[in-house]
Length: 383
Ligand SMILES: [Fe+2]
Image 1 (tube, helix red, strand yellow):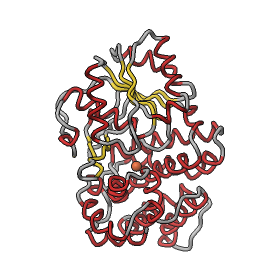
Image 2 (cartoon, rainbow, N blue to C red; image 1 turned 90 degrees about the vertical axis):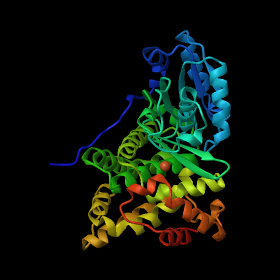
Image 3 (cartoon, helix red, strand yellow; image 1 turned 30 degrees about the vertical axis):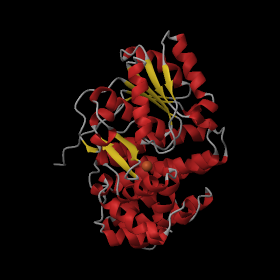
């Protein structure tokens, strides 16, 4: 008999023009006045205007909060909560990338539970039910629209806090691939590699199960097949649809199986230097894979086989190493910078961020034990 698996997934509305369902979905959840959490980029791209029209047509009043930056910060959450409470909203819509969605979740926590966001760092700290939440992702990568995770930067400690709770799974996730057509190639590449890292880390996780493995392997297959196309052409709606599906499956996989050392390390760089999460993930991914390889060679073989169905090798070891090569080649093709030093990491930062990575929640599900020296070595190689 296998282990018991528990799977949490929101209601998912998937497809081109599914954003049109936002008003009806909110009404179904009992929401009458949503608080929209977004960022300036989404407003410029015209997606807030589109959402506003849909809500107006459904006779719904709303309030907009757009003071969210990349890597949402504790003080931005405080500002959002104040506005949520003073505008007497009763529900939340997050529209944007991972930052807007994570911020929307964090605002929801404080709105009904009080206190400060730092109080909820870690797992299962939320007591009261959250307001109804709908998430509308505009990047194929984050997975935040389906996950029980929210990541918020503690600006005093300069670290990214992982908040994990079943109530952080939104009620409804509306995934409209057409919303991906305004992303620039760099963001498409970075968020796509983030989705790949979610799929790979959740597949290698010690908490993985057959359900999450199916999701993760399928996401890996799609990303290797369509991410290049999606980066190359903004309006390739077929590739966008495939990437939206891969991001969704990777999100479901990591939400239920956990992540690993890569995210434990990437969170520290993001917290210290406020760099885009996907970019750091992409730089670190091959090095963390090299480190993890001996813990689960067979799983690496499976990844190699779905990443490239024509791949051939003379033995299992060679085949498993090909995963590292395939990931590196993908990053090169997408024009992703080679070293962490491009993202502003100095040698002097390494002891501090390595120590903090050890206490990040994501490290708990990594397949290979890693000590501080191991982490320092990986950062050093990735500089
Ligand atoms: Fe990530």
